[in-house]
Image (tube, rainbow, N blue to C red; front, top):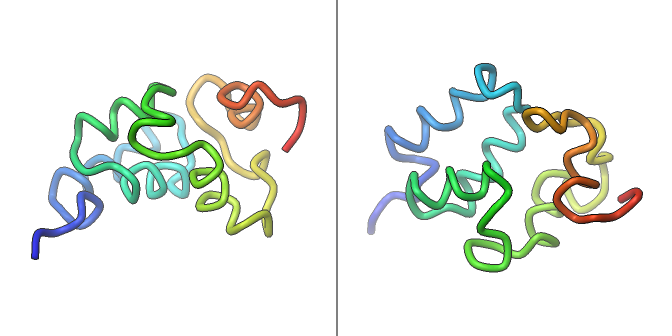
Length: 93
């Protein structure tokens, strides 16, 4: 059985790039969880790939532990804590 992307050296390096991307490791881990390869991971990190690589709602559930934490508890690049509003178009989660 092939490793999941998150368990490959590329996946581990992608997750480890969280600080330089100013992105919470929890978000990087969620991206790597859904991505099958680096190309898909980069697509998701750039805010693309939702609906293709994974559904936006599945991503939100993974990051927030099904709503146990607020999306604002995490930062994603230039959007910072407003990442969820930026990618979902919602005013609040």
